[in-house]
Amino acid sequence: MDIERIDRIGMVSAQLEPQVELLEGLFGFTTTRRTRDDALGIERAMMSVPGMSDIDWEVSAPTRPDSYLQSFIDGPLGPGLHYVLLHVRDLSAAVDDLRSLGIEPWSEQQGTAEQPVEEILIHPWRGGHGFQFRFRSVNGAMPRMGAPPAREGALGIIAINHISHAHGNRDELAGWYGRVFGMQSFYRSDDPGREFVTEVMETSTRQMRWEVIQPLGDPSFIQSFLERRGPTIHHITFEVSDWEAAVAACAARGIRPFGEREGVTDGARWIEGFIHPRQTGGMLVQFFWQERPGIWV
Image (cartoon, rainbow, N blue to C red; front, side, top):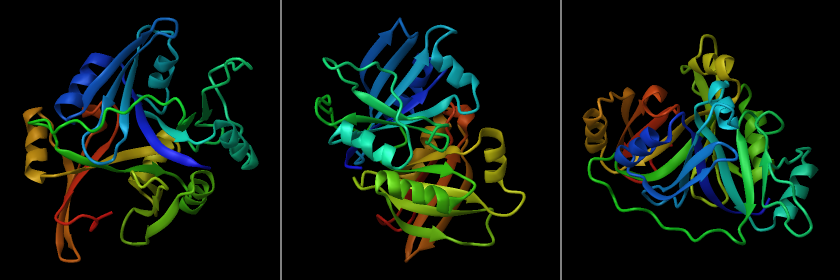
């Protein structure tokens, strides 16, 4: 598939205003546009993400109980990360590519000859391995606002490093990412002393990476996650510029990171930690600092 860029990451929250305030204050995002669709019962905020990844963020919330977003929130995948939108050179060609792989694309729109479909989806349970992927043509895409300036008191994000997808078979999912999106594997972990193994995939646009994570042995926290939610996105990882400043930003909001680890790789230090989904609107967030670019995956 001819992917031009990763355009945005979408998440769903029960309430829009508190989530926007959190993403602006703690994560340093900047709101660029607000919309409301009363017919669908949805309100949205489009946000720009600091750093070098050049990927936007959209947070959506239901405005009434019969909104389909409320169904997502009440289901096994919500609230939290909802979809990734990718721009392709030719949407019709993308449809053909998906069908050739046995994936039937789906659309919320009813296209006509005068007004063709603008967006297609890989449904989470009908081809997407528990997550939704959206595709639009790069033609007609809205102008990009660029990364916002660093916000004082925020985490100090300098990149979206990767999204981690939990699955029972990493080879199966990594192969799927390779066939559908043209991702290439560049790192595999096979440490028998840990509760999981991983395979890290590089995207063709080089904006961010994907990690496939598989439980190893019993018990495993990844296995427990799969039993509760099924195969889907497990966490998202941000790189920060200053570890102590990021921890201080969490503390200022009463947030205590967990799972902190540090080490040395090729002579350079790194530190990582996590923020619980209860404190981020439903998504497990990993953040890390590295002394030298590229020394940690």
